[in-house]
Image (cartoon, rainbow, N blue to C red):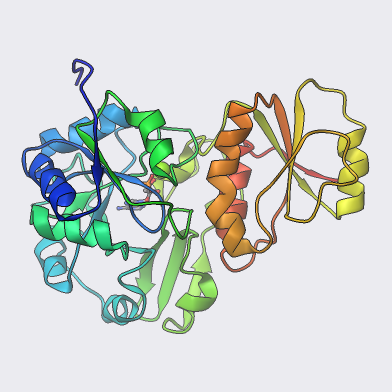
Amino acid sequence: MRREKMETILLSADAAGLEQAAAWIKNGEVVGMPTETVYGLAADACNPEAVARVFAAKGRPADNPLIVHIADMAMLPELVSEIPELALTLAEKFWPGPLTMIFKKKDCIPSITSGGLDTVGIRMPSHPAALELIRRAGVPIAAPSGNVSGYPSPTSVQHMVRDMTGKIAAIVDGGECSVGVESTVICFENEDTVRILRPGGVTREMLLTAARHAVIDPAILHELQEGQAVRSPGMKYQHYSPRARVILAEGDYDRFCSYVNAQEEEDIFALVFDGEGEALSVPVMTYGRDEQEQARQLFASLRELDDRGAGCVYVRAPKPEGVGLAVYNRLIRAAGFEVIQV
Ligand code: AMP
Ligand code: MG
């Protein structure tokens, strides 16, 4: 759906701003919504025209489903036809929070929202502005990450303004995102086993406090082969990529430095951990000390590297443990699977 360039209004996350944002959503418009994971593009999940505007604003492939956000447990049975016991236990522990669970959908979720699947991912976000916006709109809210498709996700209102000005009705300023990577997406294999389709803020270790088994889907750490079936459509696409070429380098810091210092491409940058960088002869940016900070800072760092004119970025690989698994998963995609051992 092509539309004229529209004025995009910046709203505060106070009662007046959220009331205005909710009115736009009830009207079938799209609003930038802060959440604790990343900013999203919020629309009425049950209104196909509104959802079509989300796909258009992002340039998102039609088979990549949107996650539907709810504000309370009463909304869940309205949207899904089966709720496993384990889902209730997980909801009790991790909602509101960065966990998306896949259920069989009811007919009120249009096919455009679910990317043509008969399932739907549901999440209850913990950001107070997101919860309040859903309550005021009075509808379930479909919201993918608010970036232009393929680019790193937005974790601040400035990122949203950059990507979405002229394309959506309004953006709610809810400050910086506290988690910084998208939600953990899981589906249910049987009564005590979940499968992690996308790693995020709720880690495998956390899931194992409620589920007996938590299988890591192979697509999280490995490139899909041509024609291979995919459980999580988002894993098919090049994703999270800045304009700069990203190369993920595994190995210790000394070897990383000698390797990068010996490279001769133009506009090389290094993205390393806090406290590192002295031994490098190329411009350096850092993205945190531990995996929590790395998750929070990764996308902003990738965007800033573009702003600084990086042509090629060597990135220190995080440990793929805890929320570091989510950081690693985003980085191998940002790198188009260009992972080297130094
Ligand atoms: P985003 O909206 O950008 O955070 O991406 C949402 C991702 O969640 C999609 O790309 C899918 O990989 C995953 N997802 C959403 N709904 C489903 C579903 N019904 N089945 C499997 N994966 C889903
Ligand atoms: Mg996304």
